Length: 615
Image 1 (cartoon, rainbow, N blue to C red):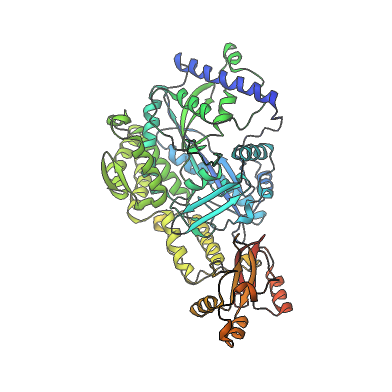
Image 2 (image 1 turned 45 degrees about the vertical axis):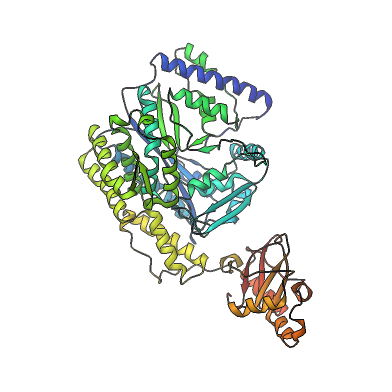
C-alpha cells in the first residue's frame, strides 16, 4: 500500500499502456521460469510490521506524516490511515540466528519509532485491531494524503457502486455502512515472507493454504471492533468486507471477493495464480512505466515486472504469491497476510518461526494436497479458526481434532524438524516454539483481551473499558513477555482519562418505542426496566420523539387514555446532541431546557442517550 504514484495520471492512455505492460510481465515471468533464471539455491525470510499510533489517552493519533518525517528512516513507510505506519524489515537467509536477527532489528526500529513518537505525545502500539478505534477515525480526513490512497478509494468505491457494508456477528453484532475503504485501516498485521524455489512453489503454496487455519487460530489477537466482541480474529471478516467490490443484486451469481482465501488447490505454476487473479479482478491502479520488461530482459538486466507487482498489490489473497528482484536476481516468495500485529515482539517472532518451520518442514505426504485433503476442508478450517481461534475443532486428514491437539501433536513436531533442517540455533527453536506450545495450552492474545474486556465491562463504561484495555496492551508490550504470561487487568485499572465527548459515556443499549405503540405498553416497559425516558422512532428507524415519565404520570390519572398512541403525546421537538458534542455543552443544554436526558443522534439515527446520571 505504501508505494507512491505521484506522477500517475490514472487516465485512459496510462491504463492502456499499463495493460500492455501487465500482459508483457506475465510472458516474461513464464520465460524466466522456463529458462530456470529464477533463484533457487537460497531461502530467505522477511517481514513487514504494521503499527498503530495512539495519543496519551490511547486513542488513534493521525500524525503519521509528522512522525515519519521525524523518524527519517527508509525502513518506515505510510499506511492507508494517518494513525498507522509500516516498517519493512531486511531479508535474512534462513539459518542459524536469522530469527534473532529479525527480532533485534524489529526491536531497534520500534525503539526508534517510540522515541520520536514520545516527542509528539504519541505511543506505538502493536495490535490486530486497536480497541479504541471508533467511527470518528474512519472519515476521509484520516486517510493519509497520498495520491495512491485517494485513487484506490475512488476506484474501489466506483467498482462497488454503493457504500461499503459491514456485518460481522460474534458474541455481539456489528452492522454498519461506510462511504470509503477506511474500514480496512482498522486492521494491522505482521506480514511474513518466505522465499520459495520455483520448482517447489505450487507444493509449498498448497501446503501454506492447508496450515493457514491452525496457524491463524494460535495467533489470534483481534477480538474487538468498536466495542463489540466479534470473531477471535475479526480482521479476517473486516478486511474482506472493507474491500469488497462485489455488487449486491437480486440475481444469484458467483462473484469473487477481492480479499480471498481461494477456491481450489493450485496445479501448475505461480503464473497460473497471477493469470487467475487478472482474469477475475479489474485493474484498480495504474502508473507510468518507462521500460517494457522485454526490453529490460534483452538488455541483459532482470526486469522488476512493475505492472504485475502493482496489480498484485491490489488483490488480497491471505497467502499471496510474490515476485521480486534482490541482488540482481529474480525470486519467488509467499507472503502470509493473515497474522495479526502483536501482542508483543516476542510473540510475533514465535509466530514467524512456527510458520516458517511448518513451511520448510512439510512432510512428503503433503506434496500433493489434493490427494490428502479436500480444498473446502482447508478453507472451512480457516474461516472457523478466525471465528473461534484456539477453541476451534479442525478437520484434519478426515478426522476432527482440537486446536491444542493439532498444534502440539501434529504441527509443532513438523515445525521443529523444519527449523532443524535449516540449522536454526537450537536455543531459538526451543525458545520460540516453546512460546507456541505454551500459548496452545494457556491462551492467545484474543483470549486475554476478551477475558479482561468482560471483567472490566462489569464495572466501567464501555469507553473506559476500551481505554483501560488498550493501556494494558501497551504496558505489557513494553515488558515484551509473551501473551500467555500476561497478568489479568484488575478492576483498579480504571482509566485516568478525562471524558470530553458525549459518545464516551452515553448509554447505547436502549429501549425504544414506535410512534404507533400504545401508552399502556410504554408504561409497562418503563416500569419493568426502571427507566424514565424512552426515544420514539418511525418506520424508517428515525428519531421522531421522546416519551418521559411525566407524560405517563398524567395519563395514569385517566384510565380512559391508556390506549392513546405514543405519537399523540410524545415530545416532538426533541433536543439532541451528537457523539462528538462536548460534555459541558450537553450539561448546559440539560440545564437550559430543564430536561434529564438528551438523545444522541448521527443524522436522524439514534445511537445513544445521555442522562444526568451519566454526567
